[in-house]
Image (cartoon, rainbow, N blue to C red; front, side, top):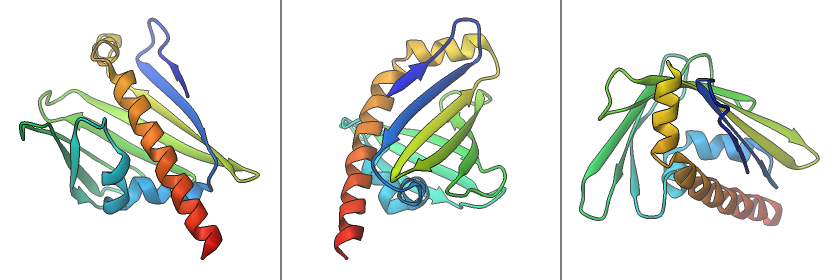
Length: 160
């Protein structure tokens, strides 16, 4: 996995390859029962509260820590999500008004899919806060769990 957070730019770009078709990655992002299996670090449990995967549709989920404290995230889909691309806003409930835009693309070649997530923040300072909050640890944990999930789903599809 590669994480790029260039100084002075209000964005973070994440790139990772998966040995699975992009349709499985798209499903992992858009089916509540799959999303709950991979998104977030192992120390948190995810509940998908809403996932309306369409242009203008809302999404909302809550991560719970071991003490039961919830951390809410929510946003909107822009354009029609597809196995090629998902565009969505992203907002942390404890920081209202600090909205960023995620563009996630899935590019498949010879059974391998490259996921690229470009997260654009309103300011460089907000991006810097995101980086200082150790976002990379959570992203790496999530991407590892996503890899396990889509690898397992791909094997199941081959044996079906």
